[in-house]
Length: 219
Image 1 (cartoon, one colour):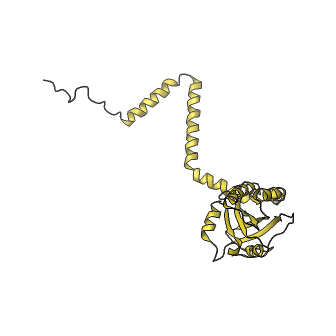
Image 2 (cartoon, rainbow, N blue to C red):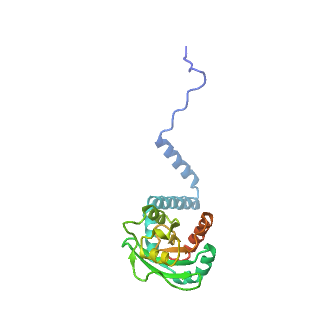
Image 3 (cartoon, helix red, strand yellow):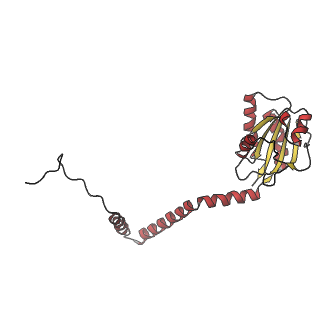
């Protein structure tokens, strides 16, 4: 008597060994290459796949090289700031805007060029100063490095710039990296108000700041 599989039907097919699968693929490729142009097409396809795989393996190194190169070339664009500054003041309803050079590796910041609502060009200080001080807000620094717009009241002054602006009647400040791209930023765009905006208006102003910050550097 012949045993019948439980539940009826035939036994499940045995899995195909990996070697057999490879040989099957090779057999199909050889069958396809019936003419020289087909063989050339297969060779080109293999070369492209190999190049893409190498790019995938080296993606981190390639990205790092691109960012490093861009950062080396990046420079603040004072001409673009002077041209777009008046519109930025209108769009943000601000009283003053300023470009700042920033070198966090050396903990140095320098005011480059500023513009107020009356059309005057001036900056709070003309000499380099410390970018970070012991009393600097670390949460604000993290936000700034993440290319977010950071806003604070000028009475929370921690450096000479903020003390000068506060003395001149500017009560609220916002700052964003220039350009707002991680690994490429070389400075900051600061906007100040004598009369602080409502939260919703300040949020809209932050969008205008980020858009402008993209134009105030070349890389």
